[in-house]
Length: 155
Image 1 (cartoon, rainbow, N blue to C red):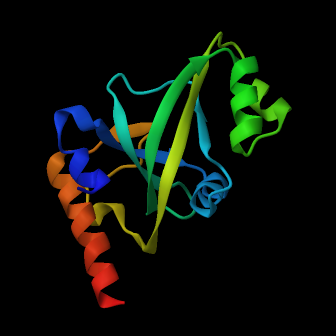
Image 2: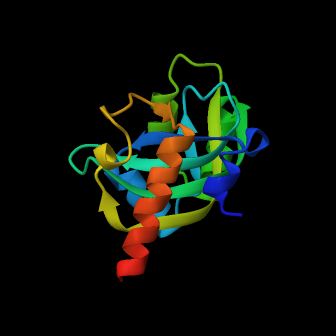
Protein backbone atom coordinates (compact mmCIF):
# COMPACT_ATOMS: atom_id res chain seq x y z
CA UNK A 1 0.00 0.00 0.00
CA UNK A 2 1.42 3.38 -0.99
CA UNK A 3 1.66 6.27 1.47
CA UNK A 4 -0.93 8.10 -0.63
CA UNK A 5 -3.31 5.19 -0.10
CA UNK A 6 -2.54 5.13 3.64
CA UNK A 7 -3.52 8.81 3.80
CA UNK A 8 -6.95 7.78 2.55
CA UNK A 9 -7.38 5.71 5.73
CA UNK A 10 -8.40 7.45 8.97
CA UNK A 11 -5.43 6.06 10.96
CA UNK A 12 -2.90 6.87 8.21
CA UNK A 13 -2.73 10.58 8.94
CA UNK A 14 -3.96 13.30 6.63
CA UNK A 15 -2.19 14.50 3.52
CA UNK A 16 -1.47 18.19 3.19
CA UNK A 17 -0.07 20.62 0.66
CA UNK A 18 2.64 22.65 2.38
CA UNK A 19 3.96 25.93 0.97
CA UNK A 20 7.75 25.93 1.11
CA UNK A 21 10.19 28.45 -0.30
CA UNK A 22 11.93 27.01 -3.38
CA UNK A 23 15.42 26.95 -1.84
CA UNK A 24 14.15 24.85 1.11
CA UNK A 25 12.02 22.64 -1.17
CA UNK A 26 15.16 21.86 -3.19
CA UNK A 27 17.06 20.89 -0.04
CA UNK A 28 14.22 18.56 1.02
CA UNK A 29 14.05 16.95 -2.42
CA UNK A 30 17.84 16.50 -2.40
CA UNK A 31 17.55 14.70 0.95
CA UNK A 32 19.82 17.14 2.80
CA UNK A 33 17.00 18.82 4.77
CA UNK A 34 15.06 16.25 6.78
CA UNK A 35 13.32 18.57 9.21
CA UNK A 36 10.80 21.31 8.42
CA UNK A 37 10.42 23.94 11.10
CA UNK A 38 7.04 25.61 11.64
CA UNK A 39 5.59 28.18 14.01
CA UNK A 40 2.17 26.49 13.74
CA UNK A 41 1.16 22.97 12.77
CA UNK A 42 -1.91 20.98 11.79
CA UNK A 43 -4.41 19.98 14.44
CA UNK A 44 -4.89 16.57 12.81
CA UNK A 45 -2.21 13.92 12.38
CA UNK A 46 -0.35 14.36 9.09
CA UNK A 47 1.12 11.36 7.28
CA UNK A 48 2.22 12.92 4.00
CA UNK A 49 3.25 16.36 2.77
CA UNK A 50 2.90 17.37 -0.86
CA UNK A 51 5.48 20.11 -1.41
CA UNK A 52 4.26 23.27 -3.09
CA UNK A 53 7.33 25.32 -4.04
CA UNK A 54 6.17 28.90 -3.60
CA UNK A 55 6.90 31.85 -5.89
CA UNK A 56 8.48 32.03 -8.38
CA UNK A 57 8.11 28.24 -8.99
CA UNK A 58 4.42 27.89 -7.97
CA UNK A 59 4.24 24.13 -8.63
CA UNK A 60 3.85 20.84 -6.77
CA UNK A 61 7.37 19.42 -6.84
CA UNK A 62 7.36 16.30 -4.67
CA UNK A 63 6.07 14.55 -1.62
CA UNK A 64 7.53 13.40 1.67
CA UNK A 65 6.32 11.30 4.58
CA UNK A 66 6.05 12.66 8.10
CA UNK A 67 8.06 10.51 10.47
CA UNK A 68 7.18 12.52 13.59
CA UNK A 69 6.28 16.01 14.79
CA UNK A 70 8.06 17.49 17.80
CA UNK A 71 6.66 20.49 19.66
CA UNK A 72 9.45 22.18 21.62
CA UNK A 73 11.20 25.39 22.59
CA UNK A 74 13.32 27.07 19.89
CA UNK A 75 16.55 25.90 21.59
CA UNK A 76 15.43 22.26 21.24
CA UNK A 77 14.26 22.89 17.68
CA UNK A 78 17.75 24.21 16.93
CA UNK A 79 19.19 20.85 18.05
CA UNK A 80 16.84 19.02 15.65
CA UNK A 81 17.82 21.46 12.90
CA UNK A 82 21.54 20.79 13.41
CA UNK A 83 21.05 17.00 13.56
CA UNK A 84 18.69 16.73 10.60
CA UNK A 85 19.70 19.55 8.26
CA UNK A 86 17.20 22.32 8.89
CA UNK A 87 18.68 24.59 6.24
CA UNK A 88 18.73 27.61 8.58
CA UNK A 89 21.41 29.38 10.54
CA UNK A 90 20.96 29.66 14.30
CA UNK A 91 20.15 33.36 13.90
CA UNK A 92 17.54 32.67 11.20
CA UNK A 93 15.87 30.02 13.36
CA UNK A 94 15.67 32.24 16.44
CA UNK A 95 14.43 35.17 14.34
CA UNK A 96 11.76 32.92 12.82
CA UNK A 97 10.56 31.79 16.25
CA UNK A 98 10.84 35.27 17.80
CA UNK A 99 7.98 35.81 20.26
CA UNK A 100 7.10 32.10 20.38
CA UNK A 101 7.71 29.88 23.41
CA UNK A 102 7.49 26.79 21.23
CA UNK A 103 7.33 25.67 17.63
CA UNK A 104 7.34 22.47 15.63
CA UNK A 105 9.99 20.29 14.04
CA UNK A 106 8.40 18.09 11.38
CA UNK A 107 10.73 15.12 10.88
CA UNK A 108 10.72 13.99 7.25
CA UNK A 109 11.57 10.77 5.44
CA UNK A 110 10.88 8.87 2.20
CA UNK A 111 11.20 11.81 -0.19
CA UNK A 112 9.82 11.50 -3.72
CA UNK A 113 10.72 14.19 -6.24
CA UNK A 114 8.17 14.39 -9.02
CA UNK A 115 9.74 13.73 -12.43
CA UNK A 116 7.97 16.85 -13.69
CA UNK A 117 6.53 19.66 -11.63
CA UNK A 118 2.72 19.63 -11.48
CA UNK A 119 0.41 22.59 -11.91
CA UNK A 120 -1.55 22.62 -8.65
CA UNK A 121 -4.79 23.44 -10.52
CA UNK A 122 -4.50 20.04 -12.22
CA UNK A 123 -5.03 18.42 -8.81
CA UNK A 124 -6.88 21.02 -6.72
CA UNK A 125 -9.85 22.86 -8.17
CA UNK A 126 -9.72 26.65 -7.58
CA UNK A 127 -6.24 26.33 -6.08
CA UNK A 128 -4.73 29.25 -4.24
CA UNK A 129 -1.39 28.95 -2.52
CA UNK A 130 -1.87 28.20 1.17
CA UNK A 131 -0.30 30.62 3.68
CA UNK A 132 0.98 27.60 5.55
CA UNK A 133 -0.74 24.34 4.59
CA UNK A 134 -3.97 22.91 3.22
CA UNK A 135 -5.51 19.49 3.83
CA UNK A 136 -6.03 17.36 0.73
CA UNK A 137 -9.28 15.52 0.10
CA UNK A 138 -9.33 11.85 -0.89
CA UNK A 139 -10.28 12.87 -4.46
CA UNK A 140 -7.33 15.27 -4.66
CA UNK A 141 -4.93 12.58 -3.42
CA UNK A 142 -6.21 10.22 -6.12
CA UNK A 143 -5.79 12.93 -8.80
CA UNK A 144 -2.24 13.59 -7.64
CA UNK A 145 -1.37 9.91 -7.58
CA UNK A 146 -2.79 9.54 -11.09
CA UNK A 147 -0.73 12.52 -12.38
CA UNK A 148 2.46 11.09 -10.91
CA UNK A 149 1.70 7.58 -12.23
CA UNK A 150 0.85 8.87 -15.73
CA UNK A 151 4.12 10.81 -15.90
CA UNK A 152 6.11 7.75 -14.79
CA UNK A 153 4.35 5.57 -17.37
CA UNK A 154 5.21 8.00 -20.20
CA UNK A 155 8.93 8.00 -19.36
